[in-house]
Length: 407
Image (cartoon, rainbow, N blue to C red; front, top):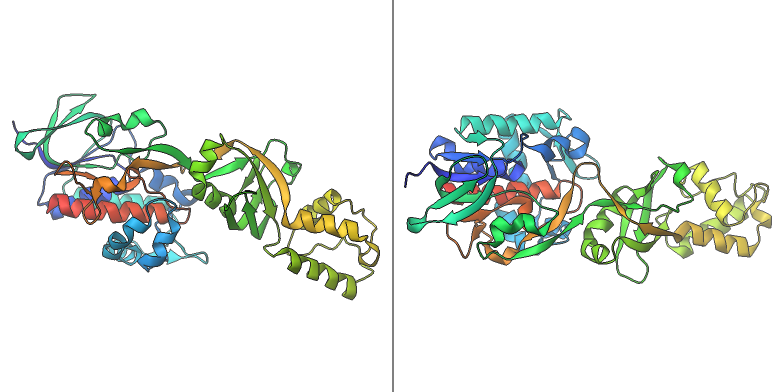
């Protein structure tokens, strides 16, 4: 049985390329990437609106893990070995400078995801990695002597010494069959990072309006997230919504994506909102309520919230009834909506679920059942919130798996 490669990486995404580059050990190992589609690094290219949110400026592992709804705490030592600081150093050592934006997200200075893709492609070529597209692996078959035979849909079998699976997350459980048939436990896949569809929203005509400091919660649960909230033509989006979708992913899936939400447009507590309105009444008694937006809310959204509270155009602060103020406060801090469905956030579909973390040694990401078999990236049951955290997991797990497999 002729060994064709030292290491074969299944999947041509971020984790796959990073694993292959490091497994190749500068050209000392024969390494191949097998990608079943005709495209490489797809999520790298679409991430961050085409700018690629490479990582996040969260340099301490104990803080970094708090941004992963699933798997984070288990990855603390892995992040200590290769974290955001190491990611920045690696890319900058290849001539790709990164910059940090106000919210901590890190992008290439070029503002182009192509810069990151080109860097990975160039490093893979420099390391002698054999890249094969339109090559789907249907089965991984362990052989005697510690080898693996990979059955492909397009041609004959491939024999290798080590296998790193970086095939990404799948939406259907059966897509993991080529892994589960090896006796590897799989957590059922569930969508994460999505926006909320609200078909009956009476704000859809205000699409494009947002608040910078808001919050979204699901009443009767502990699910709540703060941050920007955006009104869309289908419902609501922006970080507060998307982060909530990640943390509550499994619960929302069980609810078939039908659930109530309450939106706070102010970022303040109820008493602070009441106090601010009382202050307006004292300082500007003759100003109309509807014509003078507060709490950094846009005039059009403020007017709509006043309408929902029953406050008409000409009513001044000095004469607005207490009942109307109560309704306005309710609209400001607990606007109710009924979510019915979800929309994938741009093209950056993320799943929770996949290979259970107790199936791998977390300092190498090697299977603890089948020596020589590794897993990295989204194929693992790890998912982060938006902001560069999913890519950081890809770089970390890809690096550790690649270094171990190629060592």
